[in-house]
Length: 273
Image 1: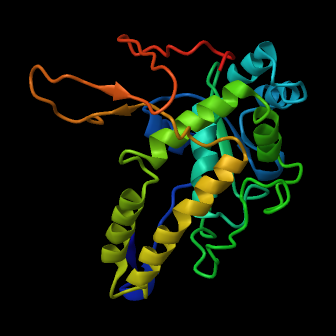
Image 2 (image 1 turned 120 degrees about the vertical axis):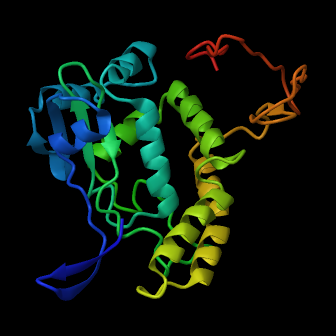
């Protein structure tokens, strides 16, 4: 949201109002009247209590390669949300994160912790060299250190189940018109550009160049971390959309067998590859 701000009839500039992440914000967006636990960077409690957050941190002290230990984390954390949150910040190359500027929240009494993007103005840095861009999945650059997000990421990444779910999310978002494909990112950039042009100086070519150069290093870093989508994932003769009556769906893979279900369940046996 962008707006021209006037105080007592005097123009004060062009602003981007931002909602604070608190209980009112969460209830308004979730259509609820819940109480919330809200945790911020450096383990700061914003609302609620730390009981479930401390349970999650304790669960991370165990070896999560085992099914029981991994399941204990799943009972506290929305894993799909956490993966998407990590993936988005990695793609956007968020500078002052994960050691800073994050929020996690759960509705009481039985909700899972979900991460919410916050204060992300250090993204899409125009000074970044995309050929030698820092690896956001590295333990040392940026300073993941001993932050809570680092504990979550580093604890979970030893699990083959987590690696598979992460790869599934990569396949969802980076391919087949997903939210992190170049055309989708470009569409959002163009909407923003058309909103602010004439008021804020933004180079349209910057958006084109940044987006065009970003995909390759991100996918390379995901592959190096064993979190990338498989090169042999099954393909569909039409990926979604409207089909005529009698349409015959074809699934193919360049390697291996294809298993599928017709009730939306996952045919893969958990922790079995």
